[in-house]
Length: 304
Image (cartoon, rainbow, N blue to C red; front, side, top):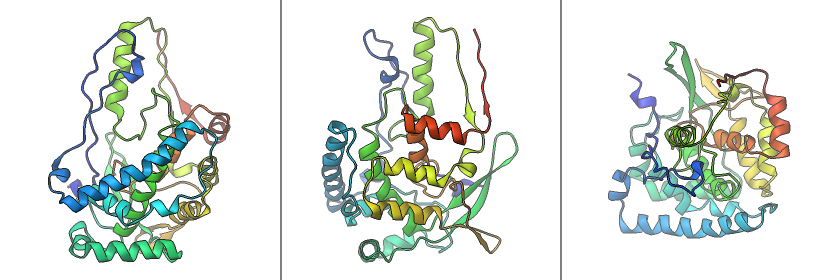
């Protein structure tokens, strides 16, 4: 019933070997993503992905070697190649946003559409549309609200996520698994299983920030971004997405806090919001300060 609202399947890692001398959290073997999309790519599209990888590798190297670097020139990475790569990563049968445009509709005139979108971004004329509100059932019987973005907005967000990943993946520690490329909950569980079976463990803490995506401060999200991103054009794009609003029952609502889940169907939910949320969980003084402000209630359990 709700298949059309779902996102692409997550990548599940194999159970890692418990080898001595390797950090437990790093022992999880990464697996390649589904090869169905890659098998269908033409040579020009494969070359396009290679160009994106090569261009962003320079960003990754700078982020790796200069931990306090603020990147002031990033918008040029949002080019036709990155937009095309973002398009090819989308789920073909994903539900459309408020514009009603589906993957197949956009593909029919793909290159002209990408060129037009690219020009809008770099002229400053790009304006995101409101996301369409929809709901899917949760395991406990409640409804999870999702925000389905228009297809063009998904592409710009997807391209922006590639750029942000090139920076922030160099900052994350090996034991961080949340909303990272090639990692997921199964990887974290595998690493946890190895840890608790190979060494003495007295306590396991399970904590969750309640209703995080509906209550997180948008100003703090942008503050995290500005800690490493000095390109004001990228900052403006993120602010536009945060203020694009949600369309439900014919009414557009723009909130002062929170970020809608599901705005980008490349992974599981809103990649921009989750990428910044993952950065907020990173062990830094800025992150700890924000989390203290943003955590009204945390449920935790421990056992000996």
